[in-house]
Amino acid sequence: MQGTPPPDGVAAAPPTVAPLRGQGRATGAVAVGGALGALARWGVGLALPFTSGAFPWGTFLINVVGCVAIGVLLVVLTELRTAHALVRPFLATGVLGGFTTFSTFSVDAQHLLLGGHVGLATAYLVGTLVAAVAATWAGAAGTRRLVR
Image 1 (tube, rainbow, N blue to C red):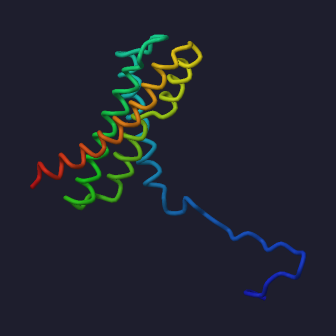
Image 2 (image 1 turned 45 degrees about the vertical axis):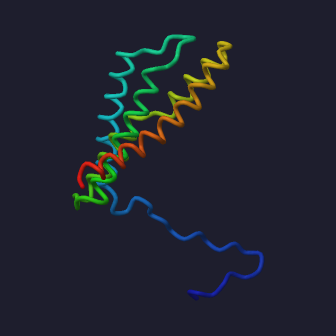
Image 3 (image 1 turned 90 degrees about the vertical axis):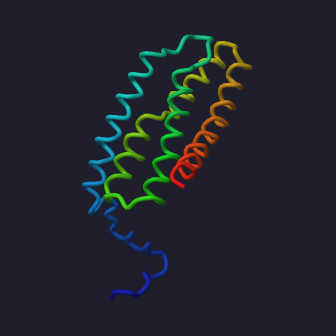
């Protein structure tokens, strides 16, 4: 009987969940955008490679520029226009999610720490966090100010 709890000692069957049901187009948009963002990040990484013991400028700039862009983009998409349903997954989650990089940020910090550059690693970790939050705020605030 439906709605009847199982007898004591018997686990109820978990509900059937289809988390991607109806999300094929959005998943595709994120995947394509992510590939484009990752290629852009790779290009910046080639132009500004990490040098052992030096500040990782390439990764720092990637993350700060990505945060400015997400601040601008989300104001445009949520406050200024009505966009197609796939624009936000493609650009925000896909392109900018693929472009910015927490993993490389973490690995760069680890290399600095393992190389004995504790002060530089600390400056990089704290500086990236502060700069990323400030960049997101500046992108959003600047966009709002520009359109008023």
